[in-house]
Figure (cartoon, rainbow, N blue to C red):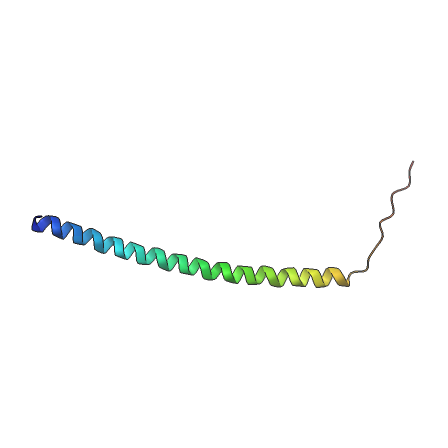
Length: 66
């Protein structure tokens, strides 16, 4: 293998390592965001359940027939 070919391969490897690190960072950030969103959904679901439990139960009467 020539010196130029070796340099090209090393350059490509360096770019690939950098890209891999950036992709890993992006995936980590997305995972953290997903976890925060899951927590928010859980809290909102609990709040909705509590509010709906506190509402008076209204029995829906069927409309009168004409």
